[in-house]
Image (cartoon, rainbow, N blue to C red; front, side):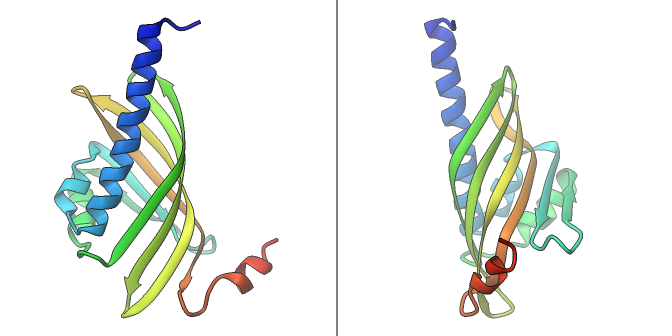
Amino acid sequence: MKTLEQQIQDLTDREEIKELTAHYAHGVARGEGAKVAALFTDDGIFINRLNPNDPPQVVRGRAELDKFYGAIKRNTAVPCIHNHLINLAGDEATGTCSIEVRITRNKRSMIGSGYYEDHFRRENGRWKFVERNCTFFHFVPLLEGWAEKAAGTA
């Protein structure tokens, strides 16, 4: 049985990790690339799988993270992150959360949903992403929808 102090620390850590993902979502939506990249450890990795048939996009390390997130413009990507599951292990944690996203790509409205598998580390008293691994169930033009694609995968 955990002590009251340990339970409070667990709750605090969970809330800080949820806020980390909220800062990520708001920063991406606002085009605040430097702030978003700073949410990662210097050796951090972002992996993005839009389509299971294509190789994933891998962004690795401080320089690549700064460049990748710095290129995101305000209101071109709006991620909505929810349904957090968090496993704590001292100054390390893992988690899974759902993502729904609206993106403007090539002057088209796109919609997607999927999940993140995250690895977190507390550095200097702050939680950061070590790895943010995103897998999409669908990522399609809004007007096209995802019903046909989903029907074929059931």
